[in-house]
Structures are given as C-alpha cells and as structure tokens.
Image 1 (cartoon, rainbow, N blue to C red):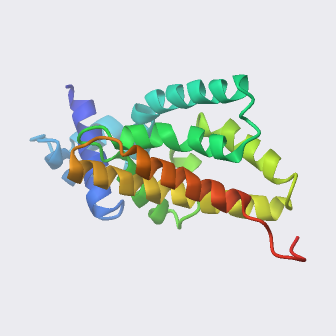
Image 2: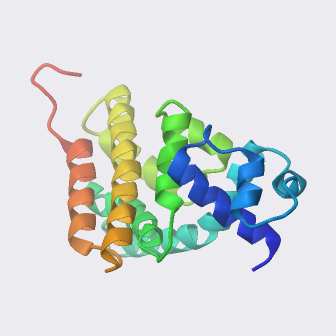
Length: 205
C-alpha cells in the first residue's frame, strides 16, 4: 500500500473515532506510521481536501454497486416503490460498512455531525454521485402525495437514518465479525421507507 492510501485509511479511522475537529493532519500522519509529520499536508494540502479524497477513494465501488441496483430496480419496474429505492440507497453503503476493518460509515456520521446534521452540506466535501438520481426519483414520487417541503423534510430524515443506521451496522459488524447483518439492514430499510411514506396528519399540507 502506498503512502497516500495509508494516509487515507488512517484519516478515515481517526475521524471515525475522534470526530473531524478532533484530529489534526499531523495526527493522521502519525496514525499512518509516517515519520514525516507533514506527509498529510504534502499529499492533500488541508483537511477539507483530505476528506474529499476519502470520498473519491470509497465512492467508486459504492457508486458502481448503487448504479447496478438502480438499473435492476428500473428494469423490474420497482423504481416507483420507495422501499426498493431506499434499498438502492442503503445496501451499497451497508456493504461497505460491513467490510473487515471499515470505518467509512462512522466517518460519514462524524462528518454529518460536523456540518450541522444537514445532508445538503455533504456534497461540498465530495459526497456526490450515484445517490443523486435515486433521491431525485424519491422526491418525484413523494411530491405526488405531499408538498415539496414535506417531501424534502422526509428525505432529510431518511438520510439521517441511513447515515446513523449504517454507522451502527458497521459497529455491529466490527463487534460480531459476521459481516453484513441482513436482518438489521432490512430493518434499516423498513425504517427509512416508513419515514418517507408515512401518512400525513389530517389537514396537513
């Protein structure tokens, strides 16, 4: 493994354990076993660029998997079913979280807290890609039943469940050494779909 990859893995782990503000570039270098304490700055420049590089590193596989699942959902006519769309969003994230030694989901959860628990802030750090068309499709479906404001509020809550739920799945996989817990993943997808599709109160917009 080259120095850049070692730094990325060390940063992901340390951010997951201590939070975004709790880790310096020097600590990342030390965590990667680098004698040169300026190694992280040399390779990435600053913390924001380091975080973006973590997403670039992880999202290639996640996006490919999510694109495959979305294609399957559309081919089978399941792209009008919020549960299946929630599964398209959740499964690739959960599969990454269940990989041995993964800290990615907990890193994302820490970043989510860092930006004020607002999903709209995450693309500024590089969290973009295959989730965008799936979320757009969900918003299209939801606005057939509720207002745009309600739909977007529910999508924000669903994203919060996804992020925190995937972090919990990752921690569980780490403690159990059994890999991805399909039952827990199904419960998570059920919860996200439930938030998205819950009936509105009488008289609500």
